[in-house]
Image 1 (tube, rainbow, N blue to C red):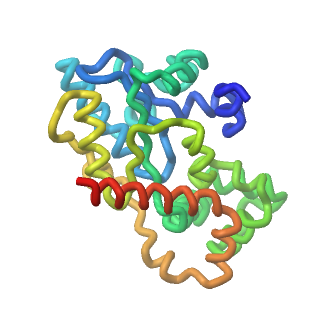
Image 2: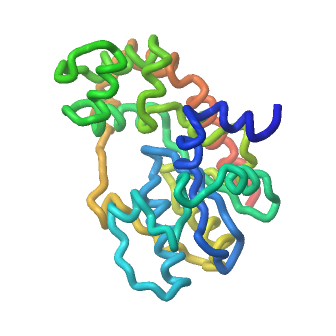
Length: 258
């Protein structure tokens, strides 16, 4: 199977794929890069940090806000069909000259956080899910019920990227990544990214949980999960759990090799 076909199989459509790919609008001081955005895995912190370094290289004093992080200025970052072609994105994901990176999150925490942020209330994403399930939009969907739906309805997994399997969102196993960070300890990954892409020893980390008020606490919800809840997560996100274990194992091996 051609690389392009294999990649596109992981996404709902070409537009979905291109919305996941983030590239600099110009050649940075270091290596050209591709960041594969992974929702609910420190994506705003990563994008804001990339923007801080790119803006610094431009000598640009623009503020970084949630608005321009979610829709980056086209002269700073290219993402989506408005600035990226399919060929450019696919070529970059295979080129030895391009630095490729992403970040992943512990799957249980990510899924619970997605429910708390996007399903527990009455927002558009929850309504879209209820439409897919053929239920009333204003019907409550508890965390346990949400996890049961994801475990037994594969189509529900594709309704929104905030709970869609990470292994599909980042094309795990297809893309040869230089760095895969984890949200529980992101700084080592950010240091390697800014060193390679911008030639800087220390990242200008934009922790959006503090600077832009973007934070979801899921620890109490995770602690309250039942055995059935956890079995449902294992059923729905088995590939993600295996991926995360592999990433953490690789991190440990890297530390031991130092």
